[in-house]
Image 1 (cartoon, rainbow, N blue to C red):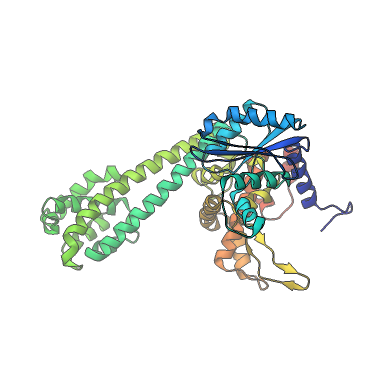
Image 2: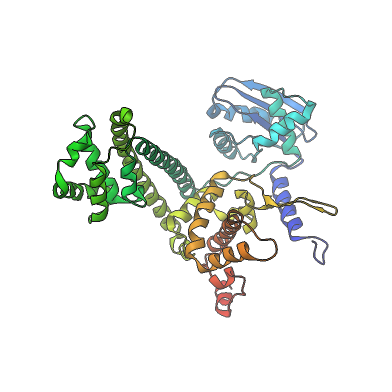
Amino acid sequence: MANGSGVSRGDRNRNARLARLRALVPVSNAIAAIDLADGKQMLVVVDHDSRVVARRMLRCRVWQLGAALEWAAGRAAAAGFAGVTVACEPTGHRWQVVGQLAAERGMPFVCVQTLLVAWARRNEDLTRDKTDDRDAMLIGRLVSELRCYEPEPTDATWNRLRHLGARRGRLVEEATGLEQQMRDLLDCAWPAVLAAAAQPFKSATWCAALDVALARATRAGCDLSRARRLGPARFEAAVRRQLPRWGKTRPCLRIVRAVFAALADSTGVAAVRLGVLERVHLVQRDWQQTGQRLIETETRMVAVLDELGLTELVCSIKGLSAVGAAAILAETGDPTRFATPRSVVKHAGLAPRERASGAYTGRTRIGRAGRPGLRLAAWRAAWVITRSNPVYAARFTHLTTRADNRLSAGQARAAIAAALLRHLHVVVTRREPWNPRIAAGGRPTTSALSTAA
């Protein structure tokens, strides 16, 4: 809805974005569109009506495109243009190389989303034909229509956090897969040991006891009776010696006794027990090593937050750990590049997708068209803060119990995740601690206003 000036806040934000893009793609510039590949590059110079000024196919690596950009600038100058704007799709790492080559030559650089190129390819002649020269021409056409974006400015510290976040995501996925693999294998061959602890894979004592039992068993042809012949006292002593490798020093004796008792349980598929127990022992070692690498990576991520001076600020949000905040910021990059907090939510694909036409109003869902890694990081954090943060817990309860438009638990957590991203954007960009009063919908206090001023 527009204000008194007839222009809404959304209109102003969009106009400002278009003005920034027009500064990068002025009418006086030609567009050098590049379809990137490994050893073959297609470069097309077009004007703002998509008319091809020059075309060139190069058999070279992306690092060798500097001379080609200078060639494009010369052809554009010969056609009467003042300069060249370089454009490509953000595929792999090659677009970063092109961006650096363009910056070294003082050329503006923009990117076009791969999905837009795919849609434009279909709309061009209603076929699924795909060629390098056609894709390069389509990239140029989309840039002339300002259907492009300015890439995120490269900052060494934020870039390091992004790569550590990518490594952490891979390690979390790997650790989860190994844990599920062990659970399935034990449920087949030795289900009794899974009942020795309420959450076995989160118990250091259970992991140490399983390690001791399987180490003894694998040396005797995967015979669990060998570990049982140790007796309760010697088995407990062996677990105590093994426990520091799992990050603890004091065992839970109840779990130790339960694992020792499970050694006498023969429930399971006998024909596969030999191979399964040996495999579980090997997988457990892989799982332990993956967990250690994960801890090391998370430590590095928190160190980057300290370097940015953000650790205390993000941890002012009760229930949000430094690791959880680092995982989110690794996906967003520097939040100052987003004009508004809602932009971060849209980037994550958590913004509501409206469906309304005339008198019809459809069911509202989240867009899911943003960055999946950011959406996942915010979703995981939402599970924790809805239990440990009173403001978010109250919001979750309200959303799931209100009389009108009651949300399911999943919908409410998505709303909490979106709120967390908005609050985190404000905390980081304004360098102010999280204020529970403002987060709950209240007005800022006088002291908060003076601090902000």
